[in-house]
Image (cartoon, rainbow, N blue to C red; front, side, top):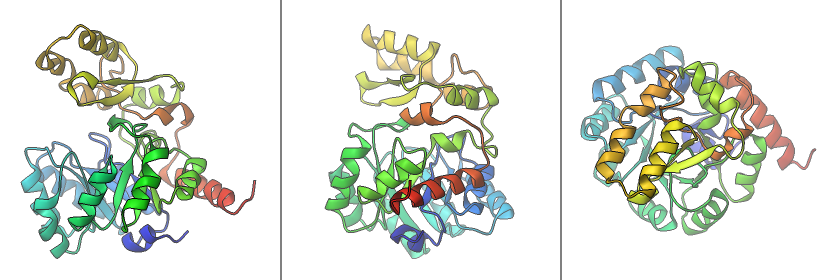
Length: 309
């Protein structure tokens, strides 16, 4: 399937893997890229040396393009930005801020820069700043979220900018991909589905929690202080939301969440850790290789888009 995004990024399938902290490391990124999509290494709050190491390890596993997601609020963002230049990373996605200060050096190094946006205004700003494409991410996503749904956000962003738009949030199969294309997207980004990939280093407990999730198992914490995060319900979310409703100060709430994502992903504590996942989790029913996932999604989407049932 050829789209503006597959041509821009030199990939076979218009499927991008989300840059999820603690999950999106070299094994998963390399597997997604080798399967024809675009694998992403999530830099999150990691130091620059770690990011460099992950890029190099991924390149040992595949010669296909691999991207890096930069969390712009990271204290290491400046150093990570320089590493991406030195390593000539072909695709850079960004979140939690404006990548404007790095745009010139990244573009000079030949990188394609694709910010994640949650509004039309931000999409326009990113286009003016030189973005090669944007990822319009709806509130259905796992992790940090905006307010607009994917269904409403994607077509409005498509109408507002001339660069290609990648749809994200609530997409987990070929039906979601076909729907995104009908809304004007040129590719999709998926996170939750790839968490349960066989190549994902996520703890088995975390994968099982997603596979067993129901449609109503999603919860959002942090709305009271303007930093909403979508995750699956557990003891931690119950306690966090209760404290939010009681008006507990932000600093005390943060103590509940510190280190909780790592506790879930690495140690498998799915009761008191943060199990980030999108609302699509209830649709994810099995662990597969990245190749099996991408082949299945592409086959289903292609059939739907050709009018074959």
